Length: 127
Image (cartoon, rainbow, N blue to C red; front, side, top):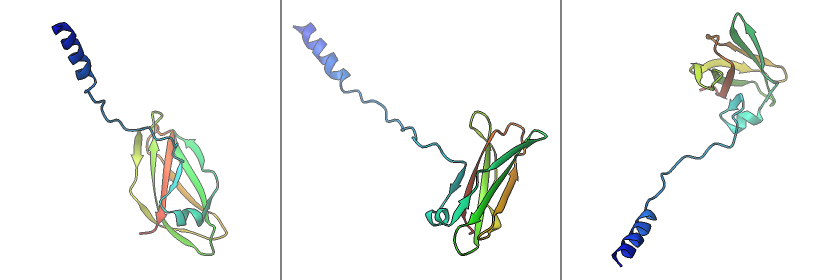
């Protein structure tokens, strides 16, 4: 009888242990160009970014134009990633860029490390 009660007690105690809370994986793959504001996203148009490797460094050109009737003043920042997806080269916000209407403006930047294999660019309205 004591063995049966002890066995039931073990089963009940095992059911009281709670699993740890874990984060969920993000189902979305981030694009290379991220825009901070929906209005800015609707007011701009991009061509695919162009990359080129010169002397071991990764050079990037992102063609962007204003799709509205106005010139847009934007800030941008970029991050270079290594082949493992780790950030290796980041900047703060760079301001003073005017995106003109009806013609392309070219945002250009390059890595400072030969380990850069990928980049991410963020845009926002000028602050």
